[in-house]
Length: 315
Ligand SMILES: NC(=O)C1=CN([C@@H]2O[C@H](COP(=O)(O)OP(=O)(O)OC[C@H]3O[C@@H](n4cnc5c(N)ncnc54)[C@H](OP(=O)(O)O)[C@@H]3O)[C@@H](O)[C@H]2O)C=CC1
Ligand SMILES: CC(=O)N[C@@H](CCC(=O)OP(=O)(O)O)C(=O)O
Image (cartoon, rainbow, N blue to C red; front, side, top):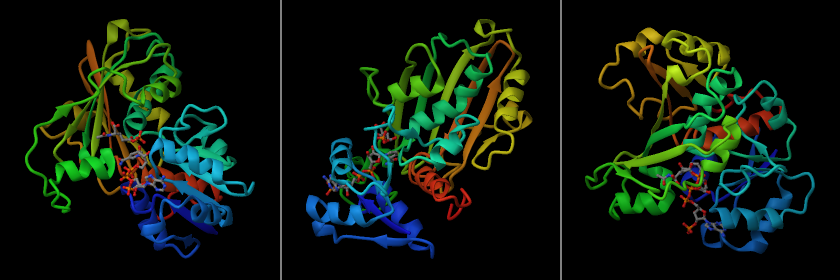
C-alpha cells in the first residue's frame, strides 16, 4: 500500500511518518523538504498513493484535496477544514456503534481536533443515553501542551532553542477569550448538543498532553443520577473499547493531587475518562495525548480501519 503524508515535516505529519516507517505493509512516498510546498510535485505523488494523510494548515488542506484526481486515493485529513462537512466521515471510531464501519468504508476521513476528541468522548454517551439534556448549558475547560499549536507555537515556547522540553517558564495561559474556538462546531455536532458549549482552553508549559473537564449539576440532569450512576453509564458505553478507558470510580473518588495530570496518556493512543465529585456536582474529565489520540494516533487508527487491518496496528 502506497501512503503519502503531506505535511510530513510538521508536528503531526512527522509523527505519522515515523510510525509508518516502521511498518512493512506500508510503502511511504516522500518528497524532499525543500519541495514540500510544490503543488505539481505533491499532486503527482498524491495521485500515485492509495492513501494520503493531510497534516497541513486548513487552507493548504483544502487546496490539497483539489489536487487529488485519482478516485482510488483515499484521504485522512487532520486539519479543521472538513470536520463538519457531510461529505466527510468523522474519524472517531468510539463515537457510536456504527462509526467504526463508516470509517472503514470511507474515502474521506477527517480526524477530530484534540480538544474536541476529549470533549466528545466525555459527554456524547451521556447525551445519547438521555442523562445530559441536549440543551444543557455545557461548560468545558481544557489544559493542553504547547505542541497543540504546531511548529509556530513550539518555536515560541522553546524560545528558538529547538529542543523539546527546553521552554522558558511560562504561566498557563487561557486563549480564545472571544470564546470562538475553532473546535466548537464539531464539539456541538458530534456531542449531539442543541447549543454550542462554553469552551475555554488553556495552553501550558509542557510539550504534549491534555485534559478536558466538564462540570455538571446532577439536579439539572434527567432522572437526577448519582455520581456512581454517571460513572456506570460511561463505563458501560465504552466497555470493550481498546483506546478509551473509564477509570474505576474508587481510583478517582480519592482524588490524589495528580489524578488529573494531563500528561499520563502521553506516548499512547489512549483516552482516559475520569468521573469525580459527589452526588450533587459531578465532573467528567477526559485525558489524552494531543499528539496521540488527539491527532497522529487517531489518524493511524483510522487508516488501519480503512485498510481492514487490526485498528491498533503500530499504535
Ligand atoms: N499539533 C497538534 O496537536 C494537532 C494538530 N492538528 C492539525 O493538524 C494539522 C497540522 O498541524 P501541525 O502538524 O501541528 O502543524 P505544523 O505547523 O507543525 O506543520 C504543518 C506542516 O505543513 C507545512 N505546510 C504549510 N503549508 C503547506 C503547503 N501549502 N503545502 C505543503 N506543506 C505545507 C508546514 O511547513 P512550514 O512550517 O514550512 O510552513 C509544516 O511543515 C493542522 O491542521 C492542525 O490544526 C490536529 C490535532 C492536533
Ligand atoms: C495549543 C493550541 O493552540 N492547540 C490548538 C488545537 C490543536 C488541534 O486540535 O488542532 P486542530 O483542530 O487545529 O486540528 C488550538 O487550540 O487551536
